[in-house]
Amino acid sequence: MQHQQLANGGWQKLEFVEQMANIGSEVERAMNWRQKNNKKFQQKAFERALELINLTLECQTNISRLKEVSRIKECLIDDFIFENQYQSTNQSWRSYFHAFNYAARTR
Image (cartoon, rainbow, N blue to C red; front, side, top):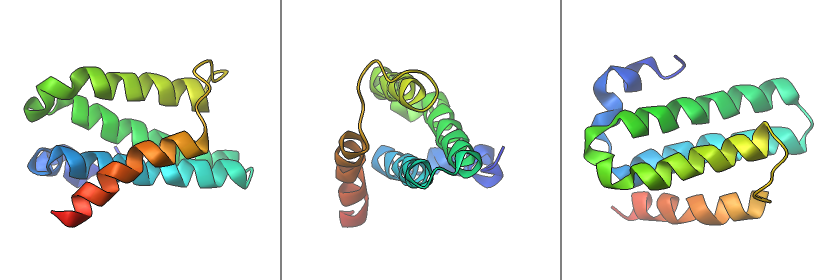
C-alpha cells in the first residue's frame, strides 16, 4: 500500500469528488511519465491510481457510483496495460478528471 493513511480510514472521509480528483492526479502523473518514456515511474503512478480506485470501490458511501468507478478502472487498465481497445487518449482522461478537480476545489 502506497497510501497507508488513506487505506486506514482517511479515504472514506473524503467526498467522492475529492477521491476522483486524487485519482485523476495519479493518472495525470502516469500520463506525464508515459510521455517521457519512463516506464518505471509510469507504472508506479498507475499502480497508485489503481490503489485509490480500489479504495473508492470499497467505500460504502459510493455504492451508487460503483459502475462508473469500475468502468474507469477497466478503461485505465486497457489504456495503460493492454492495447487500448477503448481508444482512450490523454486528453479524454484530462477532460474527465478535470471536472472532479474543479468540483473539489470549489467546495
